Image 1 (cartoon, rainbow, N blue to C red):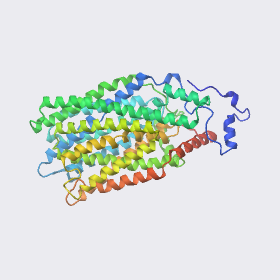
Image 2: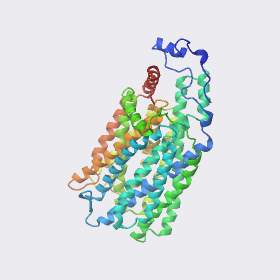
Image 3: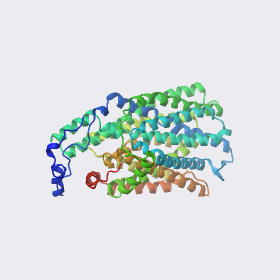
Image 4: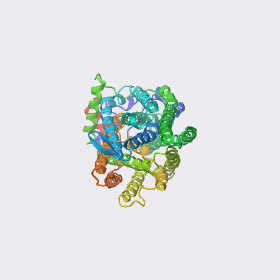
Length: 525
């Protein structure tokens, strides 16, 4: 429901609200608006069924098919094709299996940057974003089912393509799904009640902003929690399938089991994503004002890059997000290659490890959300705790450079890793997105999510490429050597975020940005 009109509070001479004139005459006055910053349209009010459909999509897009077992199947085929020699000819050079995986990962993320530049405009303008998500999801399903035809070592070249395109499909669908959550959270009946209370003077702007933060945190964290619990059930079914296929009987059975697993997870994704495709309300983005949408998309990226220099706190988070995202994505890939080598690509063993990790993930995300609620902590505090956990993880991996006794060289370490990662690191995937919504000016959510997505993908291919080069340059080909680079990267990102980022300053910068934009008539989107 729209806020009450304010015609009675408007100055007849220049059309400005009286409160705005008072603020301009008194620069020390709080920048609070006379009405709530979020306006409500009953057509786009978030319903219970729409929220649960949103959660259901994430149950399917859990990463099992294309982010977890897809890479395992790919590395498994590479290892079998390389044989005792240990290397394969790839892009002009003989390379180790680990180097090929990291290089393919980097290529995948580089392509994602181009994709976001080309079609990212659809997320910001009109009502096209849901259609893009549906299209990308169909591609993801096709890749998942495509693995049924690739389960022998002689087809490792095809596996490269499935791996690269699969990562692209997974990451892009995840991004366009995430882009919906600020709109969902800010159109809930709870936030409408808070807006009415703020307009009536019952609560302060600070209380309204806190309610907005907690509503976004609730939606993001509950989505992650429900996905984690559902994923355990999916993995339990997968264990039964693996026993039925007797994956331990031979390498051929294990190869086929991995392909069946990927296809099964893709089928689940297809099934549970359908409600979101039908129930999501197509909330309008920005109006391209007569521009071609493609050109408008490129222009809005330029606009965001230009304006973010005025939003210093948003820029600080952009830098920290770039560094920490690069470190985390590469850390996960490096540890996955080490884990696959230690457990010899055994499908059941990898599934058991995932079940342990996801169970810990459910406990971790519920624990983080509960602690934030109980102690009324801000998003930055929770995010910094995750950054410290990532630094400790990289530090443990760095020890493995100098000794084989521990540092991701033993089976028990990967059990410990899965539990630690789930409890203390996995909340990154919700809180990093909540942080983006914290530093994005209202009405520019899609603009800033697009920018952060591109930056995130840029960072994600730099780390793997550097790590691949580090492994290739190591005389022994030590797969743990990238932890030198990753430890420093994690520490640098934590310093940026912990020392300089201030979310209260960010809110004030956003208010000034929006007021100045209205005053000079620079709203060209």
